[in-house]
Length: 401
Ligand code: SAH
Image (tube, rainbow, N blue to C red; front, side):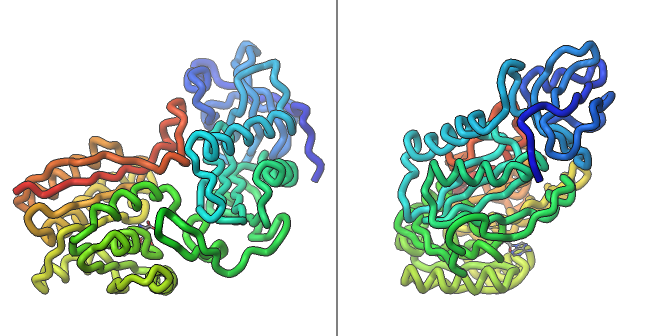
């Protein structure tokens, strides 16, 4: 497929529906579009304008999507070409390496966080010498070769692997498959370091691009707090929080997940770090209740469930599930115990989540002090103009009574 840098059409917005875009929110929703002119195809650069023909922004066209354009520039004079993307990608990489100091070649880091780096449609994670890329819009998928070339120039990886997200690809109407786009084929497992912990990452079969990089700094912080404590890591995936807590000197670590593959890798991660963790497979919501019935207690419980609210309609049900998990966790905690409660449902507000935790505490007959309110690791920045991409909450609370 040949792609052009030249604009190939116009997307005209409905009268009165231009305000979010004028405020630099990059998403053009299909119900705000009055007309598409010039017959652009998927992936073409289009000019977005208001009903009077005034320029609003440049973006790529995704006709099948509920968000048919994601705007990448609000400057009419800008040319959206290879140099444009080289500048955006250099900025994103420099932020991680120069500003955050996340340049350790054995570590894992998110190098490009889509809207958070003004590159809607692109995720790039670096796991040691390998890059994993996800193209989330037709426009960037069509320019994958150019983007990979620029990433190679900027980061000199051993290989670049593509890991498409099937749901998003379907909604965007893009057809991609897992493939090595350049260089060496990544090994079955890549070993990365995170602080003093080491983890094996499965780029092909693991969740997300292989690891929950968004929790990187929370794992480091929460791990430290585990020192001397009996720790329970529910929803442990490949053992992230559990390994950190064990390395920091937890008295004991128990970890639960429903996924057998994740637990297999978690067990290997425990061995790699030479720590003892007691893993159990099961539904954490039920297991937490069972542990309580067995009379077990802990000094720290970590809850990092998957995204429980996937749509606005699902928020109420999700809040009940968050409350339920937090209630069970609180019942397991001894005096002065620590509850680490995470929520990665972007649709659940900070206020709603705090209320769910508070309601759980009231029902459990406990009082809490909120010690820290945390979010994603700093390599997952968000743009305040697009607050939907600020999705992760991590509350660290201590039982006070
Ligand atoms: N804390 C982890 C990431 C957790 S992601 C880390 O730092 O790496 C959420 C995890 O919850 C996934 O591993 C998923 O397999 C698991 N999961 C989903 N539903 C579950 C359930 N009902 N009970 C237990 N685990 C569940």
